[in-house]
Image 1 (tube, protein in one colour):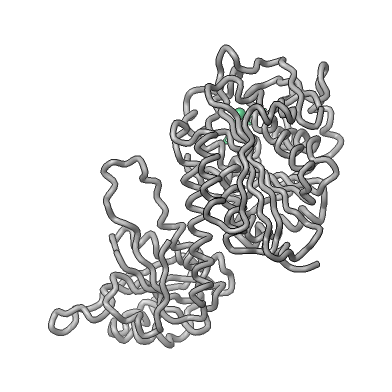
Image 2 (cartoon, helix red, strand yellow):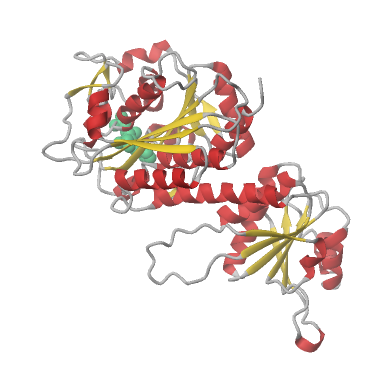
Length: 490
Ligand code: BES
Ligand code: MN
Ligand code: ZN
């Protein structure tokens, strides 16, 4: 995304929309707000007095400015007054940016300027930029009549954010929006091979980031029987897509963050086929993998001092004459045998091998993102992801990163009492339970079997990673916040 800085007075040049922020409750107008109020002959103060501008986060009130003398545009065409709540929560600033982007889109504005006050620092302005850039996102790649209209150009006039702060926010926006693009792309345009190509292009573009793609012969040699079993029904092969980032300096010498994301580029359910209604949404079943790749690349692009290795298992889950059948037994990379009770519980199979592989690659802690279970959508909906893990401290770290970034997750239990659910009569484990209960916990208990002794967290994003059939980019900002936490020496 494009965002530029300008000195404070530039706010009052002829732009399509000038954005001003107000807190809740509104404070006496100063600086650019006061100047805009004069331009509008006191209409802003009047709207505040009348209680129509409250400052509630994301509230937007739009004014047209009076035509300038001589008909020449010398002032902003419109002034949008946007609420930022009490001003102390950066997520409120993000909501304000989203509201501004929506208004700019509706108005077909080409230029938008935020008039920032000197007290609006990098956190506030950065969050506004984030909201603006992610709020302007649309998936129009396949609309032949999509207007040739790029989204509005944003300028930040005044305020305490440096160009490099804004760059940081803009790169975050790009990563979140790219993760959405990857997930939203139809399965015939985003295969495991396409995703691997995307990862290698990311690596080619970023210093210190290397990509390696493990193909089927390599996966066979490693004994990745669980991942390979999912791809068996598809014409397309499986891939294990790996990104490694070696920073110039490392904050914690003994740490390597291991990141895994589920990338089922289409999930028909396989032989345990899904109902057809709504099945098109299963192109999004790679949202975890998209977040993992884009999150890892963002950390590297920003040069954070955190060593990481990201492994994204990618496959298409299809029924065919060669597909895995219910009752088949497969062997995962760590040697555990799995009875495939339900071929639609494929995410845990591909994650099993990716997690097991990372335990052999020097990772010191693990986190995985996956659109894993319908059960977590029932439990937590679209607001909180399900958070599962084996290590209390690491769970707290992930939760905290979620609160800081807005990618919320809520702890779910893993308890030995659930263990009978994953037992099989013929193999070490079963991938699905006979009992229809605790489906999201079941999946977490299953994944834990592949994480060795490492601190590990599983984030089930089936509800938060896809909303109304669209990818959200959930997880990208969480990974960034987590890496920022790990950037502090311990
Ligand atoms: N990809 C689905 C989970 C899913 C469901 C994601 C709805 C987003 C929205 C996953 O592979 C799946 O099919 N899970 C099954 C597991 C069951 C067969 C044990 C489920 O949740 O029903
Ligand atoms: Mn499935
Ligand atoms: Zn799935």
